[in-house]
Image (cartoon, rainbow, N blue to C red):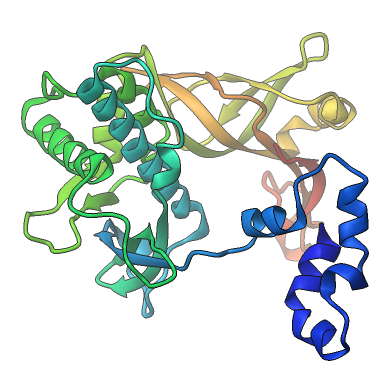
Length: 338
């Protein structure tokens, strides 16, 4: 296939030499001896024969200190919010078309009709300018006309969140099959941050979606909600039979929590246990919490990093009876990235 594509791109060279690209690479002979599609049909299937155009779709805005920068930018981890936003719109569009057609299935190729692209980032916190790709023919005639189910899906999402912010519940006609997708949407948002849903024309006020909104939405259909955590604390105990360790995070009221770990960390953790007062552990990942914000467990294996503190020898003037020691530095003992 690579030969076919490369030959096609260099077709002018082959014709200049009095030799067609198909003859030059033996494509006719190869396809004549196989049951594969003809080279012309293959080329039209893999080549970008139709130009594409795009139109404004929405301008979601990320608000918070993290997004207030001198130049327009979005942190890499926050880009996942645009992916989750896209999945919600597709999920809503599928429910809308099922209802409209009275069918449990959507038409074949339905989701391929929708493609969003991040066309730019504007100032004003971090305004993501999203455009929707519209296929067109070689003359530039656009296939789409008017509002479709994906446009309506964006409206249903904004209106549904706005209704929830006011009333504490979703609209009665909001598709229940879509609500589990809120578990991923807003997961990276921190306290004081918001994802503002805005139409491209900004003819309606923005709708704020925060980590608190997400928490309450997820708890409508689940006993737990999840969010990203980055914890530092002390090792309490290690259970090598089930590959978990007990961990006391600092600066939280979680108490002692259980953390799963891969077998590759077993030796490091058991050695660190003998030195637990001088070993700091960092644990990061997706954690589940209940409705009272009590820690429940981790989703999968979190990342675990062990660091041992080294202490300096007391200075002569500090005396031999010094009850405290000074931290001289930290030596990383390695860890595990989930």
